[in-house]
Amino acid sequence: MPTDVLADLLPYIAVGFAAQLVDGALGMAFGVISSTLLVSLGVPPAAASAGVHTVETFTTAVSGISHAIHRNVDWKLFARLVVPGVIGGVLGAYLLTQVPAEAARPIVLAYLSCIGILLIWRSWRYPPKIKNPRIVEPLGLAGGFLDAAGGGGWGPVVTSNLLIQGASPRKTIGTVNTAEFFLTLTVSATFLLTLGVEFFTKAMLGLLIGGVIAAPFGAWLAKRIAPRPLLMIVGVVLTLTSGFGIWRAFF
Image (cartoon, rainbow, N blue to C red; front, side):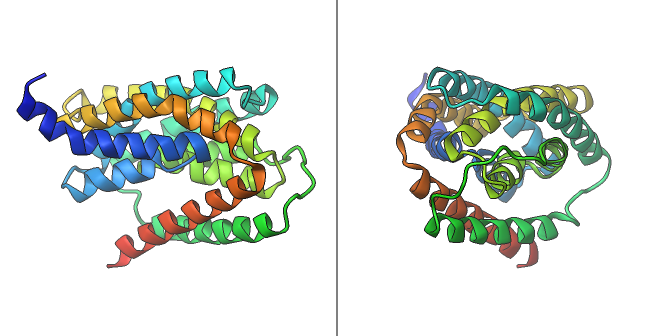
């Protein structure tokens, strides 16, 4: 690879690496961080979401395999999430290519900020009683829809709400990451059919390289970090990213 091309790619590789490391360890943030970066650089929202989901097709494949190897996946929970998630993703991707879906974004982000604060509070009272979550399929549908329509949201919506219901932090993160591969694959195919391949840029190549490199390390971290600090870190990251999204929406 020519030196000048590598120099252009390095910032995006670094962002992709950091975003996927956080996403693999905490079950959220790759789509939010990457989409925010691309939109801030002037990429249209539909193209940014399409590019990020194409990149995530590869990063979530590596991440899902890594989580499975580390036994971070609850396969019964996975089966309940994946189909509604795919359906929601197709609907969200189609909507984003037809009409702007940003109007509801501040409301969703405010809700997620509250969930993040609640997760931080729960981490201080850890350990809670681990329970099987009851509300799963609606979360998959909503998470898939918001992820495709807003360029990120699967992890924040699904991971945080499953944790609020008392699910195991490590198993939740691994399961949500693994199910995300099928969501991103479907959403990417939907965007490909509606937008073509013009959305894939040099920036997205850098995100792809960095994300694939980081994916195995994120799964390893999710297994190694103790449940209580893991729950607190998820709450902090969710609150900060949602708060930043609210700030960008109004200022």
